[in-house]
Length: 323
Ligand code: PMP
Image 1: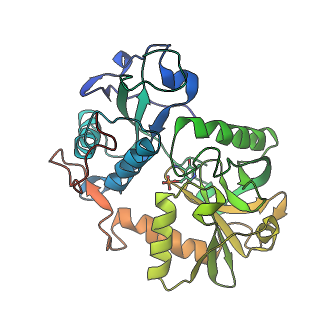
Image 2: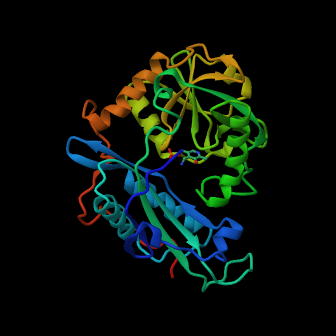
């Protein structure tokens, strides 16, 4: 997807011109996948730009760093403030934020040394619907990948780390080569897991089903939002391990993620989902979700964090690992 690069990027503690955020080619992360990152949307609202669950995303980034013993040189509230700042200095009304923390230069050993620096950058870019505008209504055609997802005792799927995305790349590129919009990975024991960059929901007989955390998923913040929204609309949500064929028998199915938002699935492995595009339950949840941004649904959870450059609402936590 072509990107319009903004003027500024936040890099290692300050706002810099976009082209000045440079990294050495011998950085540990480039060789060994040792980065942790987030994708966060800033929506344009009638009260100005607002980060969607910005604090929750930054907290997940610190959790990812914690799993990998990665020292974070900034506190959570400093990075939240930096997110506000980079949206503001670029004059953006809506944006996709990409904070990333990664191991820098400090030797070729796979085991990171304690003195290896952690570098941190935050980009804010303009970005539309990840799977296309049309997809929100018509849905996308997906396939089950021949690649399994990472297993719980190999690479932790709860950490949103750069290295995990080698698995996602294989799943997504295979799907695209075969003419599908996205691929769904199965867990190591063959149950449904998630898309290459999205969580998965199935609607059957008016109830919602989604794979549990044990099925090698990333516990998506959009997934959590959908669960809470659906419960508030009195839908029953069941988190359980499911065999692949449940997808072929679904009344409706959809993908969730910061980039994908809520995207209906039109077909799986060339079998049309019964709703053949967006079904009524998906639509109901989509309306409640997108309504948060145009003000037609109430933000009862406090998920919208207005971009204002004021001190962030830090929740008392600071460094994942002491530096
Ligand atoms: N699973 C994977 C593998 C992802 O990359 C993403 C995108 N971050 C998701 C699920 C959805 O997570 P979220 O809703 O927090 O963006």
